[in-house]
Amino acid sequence: MNTETSSHPAEEALTHFALGLNNIELREHVDACSECHRYVQAIQEAKQKIKDLPDVHIPDDVRKKILAMPHKSRLETVFHLSLFFQQISKSPFLIVFAIVLLAVFLYIFLVFVL
Ligand SMILES: [Zn+2]
Image (cartoon, rainbow, N blue to C red; front, side, top):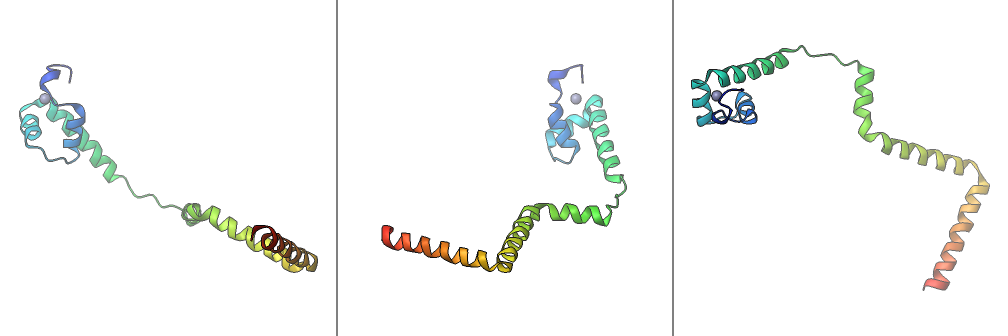
C-alpha cells in the first residue's frame, strides 16, 4: 500500500474487515481496489492457515499441571496448615503452650481492652 496511501483505508481497518468486520464502505473499496483486495485476501489466507493447523495433543501430566496452576498457592496453604496442625497434635507440649498463650491473650484482652 505505497501508492495513493491517503485514498486507501487504514491497514487496521482493512485487517478488521478481512477478519470479519462487516462494513459497506470498506467492502465497496476492497471490491474496486486491487491493492486492498490483495491485502485483505492475504490476511484471510493467513487466518485460514492458522485455522487449518492440526490440534496438538497435550500430554496428560502437562495438562494436569496447567489445570492445577491457579489453585497451586491455595493448595500449598492448605497443605502447610494441615502439616502445622498435624505437628501440633503430635506434641502435648505445643498443645499446652497454645492453650497458655490463648489464655494470656484472653486475660490481656479482658483486663486491658475491656
Ligand atoms: Zn485501496
